[in-house]
Length: 79
Image (cartoon, rainbow, N blue to C red; front, side, top):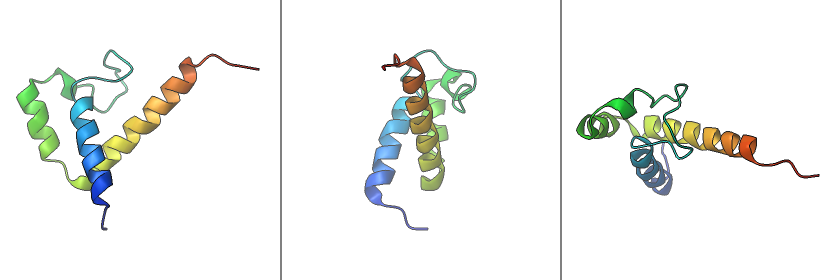
């Protein structure tokens, strides 16, 4: 499967940020990166760099969906 370079680059940049912290805050236990975020930075980077492009894009997609869901939950309802 061939992936678009721009998507791969975007996912890689975003996942470097996500291994540092969750954009919502804290470190949610349900997050696939929960335990990874507890590791020393060097270990987190090594773990991420071992991932294939497809794995990084899957993690990125999961985090994008999760962020959209949590933002929607926090948004006040309007009539």
